[in-house]
Amino acid sequence: MLQDEFRREIAGKLQLQPRQAVLLRLLTHDGYHGGEISQTLGMHALKEVHLWTGRHRPLAT
Image (spheres, rainbow, N blue to C red):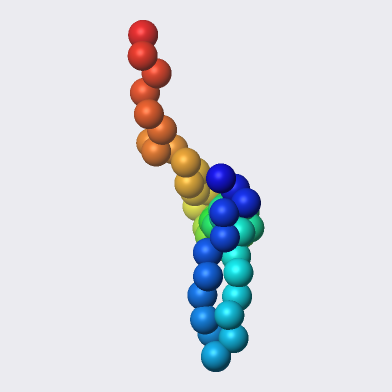
């Protein structure tokens, strides 16, 4: 599943992107920009951002 590849053509060249690489890039990109936002807010004495707050499924009780 993670080894499945996506094909895309850019400037006439074919690129193969494994699903794992796409997911890792998405997660690190999200974390990078979240850090940028939190740092900027902190410079202005504002509270940091919690990117994952409220985005979880509630556990069954």
